[in-house]
Image (tube, rainbow, N blue to C red; front, side, top):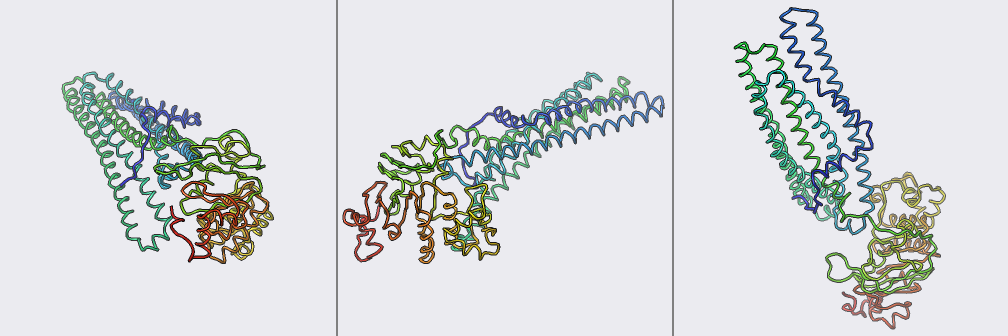
Length: 595
């Protein structure tokens, strides 16, 4: 079953106009294709005229030289026609690839700048499908429109020729032509419908693949290969059924066009043959007329094919422009003030935030002041709002009530680049890119010195294991850092933060997923990282934050108490119970620590 998405509705006219606009940057190429199209249109009628001349004049006069000249002209026109068609097809297909490149760049540029909540509500596989599969459909629009236009010109020229040759016979040849409108209307709608569903199903397959490959350890740990295999087969089967149905309508429209063309040819042969027998028409006229009719329905078939491609392209264009043009999908808002990295204070004033679809706020009326150089620890039961609170600082989420101020200026007034450049984040969910260790450490800097990378690694206690790797700092860590241990990954993310040299450091349970030995090493690295910096530390293990300047105790999105460790042991029952839970299991009240 395809994933259902709420797409913004666009008209066909808007989609075609929007798709064609991307070809505006390549006006020269498009102009060359248009010239080729205009030169192609009169060639088909010219071939019919040569056939008439040969039958009526050359053969009767038995003029061998003229026959050779006509054959050379006939072949020359076919060669010229072939060259024009190759030139037009190559020019437009190559231009389509350039448009595809530009459109993918624009899509990625837009998606990468969308706010975090959008990614929380979207499937990664679906977003990948929009960039890889859906944009491909857009590039066929202008070539198909040009093909459509070219066939219209050719059709007009051929109709004019048939009427000129024999108005009576052309009536019978063209009488059945209105029936050719049927495939455009009926099959065009069907192909658009199934094209839209196919694009959605392709996204569904991408989602299953992305989830399966990303969660391969979980799948194997639960021995669920059979279930995942069944899930993929189900998605793949649905996609295949749609593709087969789409092929049926594509072929059905072509065969209807063949039937219309054959009926027209039969009419011409019958009525034209009778006129030749009765002496009302020469064999040359009938030959020329027949050539025109044979070529007349070829443009109609190509018109139908072009229409099918346009309809399929519009189905993909809907999904592409849903992201690019939908008013509900907007990039992150930002201000114009540039944060220079000189942090004096960070203040939360009655800040509240609720996740979409959740009945209770994750952060509820928080007031908190953090001064430069302070080490502030935030503790509390799971789900108390600790991570949500710190995620408001880099503006991963936007406070719905209240305001967060940095140096007395609301965060919304700062540019996102300057704000995030001076913030460092180390969390338990480590992520490394599939590049070298050095590139991961220096991710915040485009140009870096190897000595700076090594100093950061030394401070993070990572240099020792790095030099033991097969290629040292040039070792590629694999997707997500799969080639190294959890503790090593965590130290590399700390080295990355040291290399960034942030004004404000946020540590979100950076050691909670590590064993005791790894935690000791990582904690030393974190101490080096926090030295001389304003730091906010979220930790379940209270042993890591006992020396903090201020400890903030949270529960149910609210701050229950603030103070130093010794003060909170006496004044805050919740903190006291959290402390006893870790250091004296026999003396804590579990009910006090639950939400």
